[in-house]
Image 1 (spheres, rainbow, N blue to C red):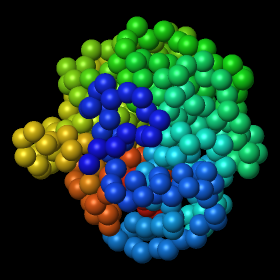
Image 2 (cartoon, rainbow, N blue to C red; image 1 turned 180 degrees about the horizontal axis):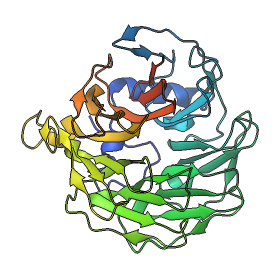
Image 3 (cartoon, one colour; image 1 turned 60 degrees about the vertical axis):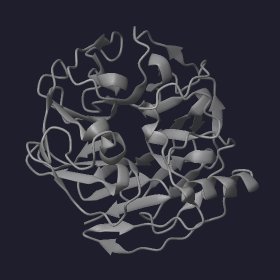
Image 4 (cartoon, one colour; image 1 turned 180 degrees about the vertical axis):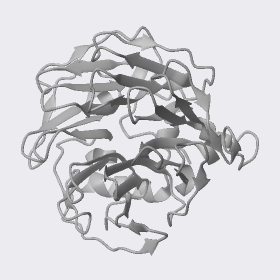
Length: 352
């Protein structure tokens, strides 16, 4: 089943709509949120373990989660459909709903510290907090396009991207957002900056889009990419070595900062082999990627797909995670603490 957020006005590109597929459980969750005006009660947790992953069930909340941000092993936020924001301060044992003041789909969240955070979502939505999410205030993005990604380098400078090549930049904590020229109409699905060297940044998206900056975002260069697959996730461990993932299970690797890309091993060479012709996208899409050190990394995608490498991406294997639901995001606040979110209120944790 394929579902776009309740306030998404566009269905122009079905490939990029992959991120918004969900299940009947998600629909029920959205209906529930609508009846209570987007305000949720405190939710408790139930946990079960499967091969190292702990299922953190946000009881009563079954909307899809896209946004994921942790500032420590114990404190983090997830965001999703119908304006949902959940916050934990005890490593996911308990979650508390925060009032977003909107019913828009909240696609991405970024915190520069435990107090300062931002959320990007549909219809140009940007929300900001300076008190850890106790209160969220709307910011004027200057656009009405859907925004799929947001990242902040510190409490002042941040980037957001989305529909039709939209790229936004702020240097004052979001008080003002300025449009940045990308010379493309391709959707920007994910932005990544090196926190250790923020002169280096990347944006990826529709039809193999790769944008690279070497000067902190003053200029962006579009790179040729022979694999024209929609790219949903990107991660760099340094200025040269990085990965991008997307439709048909593609995992691309660069050793020169994004100038050129090669396909790494999945199940065999290149895109995953499971599924039947014509349904590869639904069965194989990868949505996000993260590494915990130079060698060990994870990628997540549809139907509970979790892939792991222990040799820097030369080989990838599927690992069980205890669910068959679509997974949209993954993050490691420390090398021993990992988080995954997805449809149906899915929250998974892997700890030490």
